[in-house]
Length: 145
Image (cartoon, rainbow, N blue to C red; front, side, top):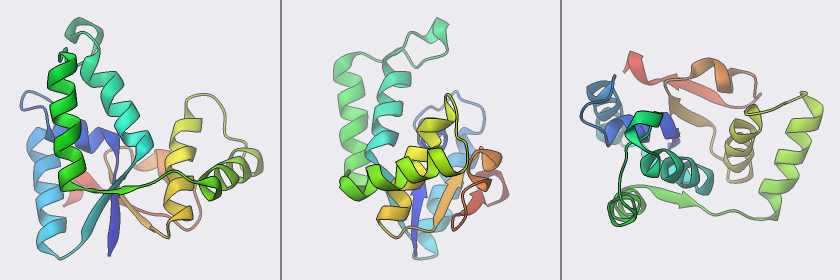
C-alpha cells in the first residue's frame, strides 16, 4: 500500500534531539517492514526545507544549505516522490473551496490534493486532526505504530 509520510514525521525522523524522534523512525520502519511503499509530496520537501534551514532558536534545525540539500537528497532516495501536476491544483482548488480551508491549513490541503491526484489513500502523521477532515484519506497516527 502507498502511504505518504507527513512533514512532521520526516523532520522528527531526521532530528535525533526532537520529541518523538524514535516514534517517527519506528513508524517509518514498521510500515516498510509491512511491505508498504512510503512516498512524499513536493510540498513535504518545501516544508522540510523551511524548517531545516530556519535557525534553531526560531524552532528550526539550523542546517546550512549544504546540510539541508544532503538531507533532502536522502529523502528523495528513501521515498517515492509524488510529482506536482495539473490534477493536484484542480483537486486542491476543489478542497479549499468545498470544505472551507483557511490559512495554514491550505498547505495540508495541498498535501491531501497531491495524495488524491496520485491515488494515495493513507498518510502517516503526528497531526491526526489536520487530515481527518479530508474524505477518502485514512490517517495513521505515528504515535500508535
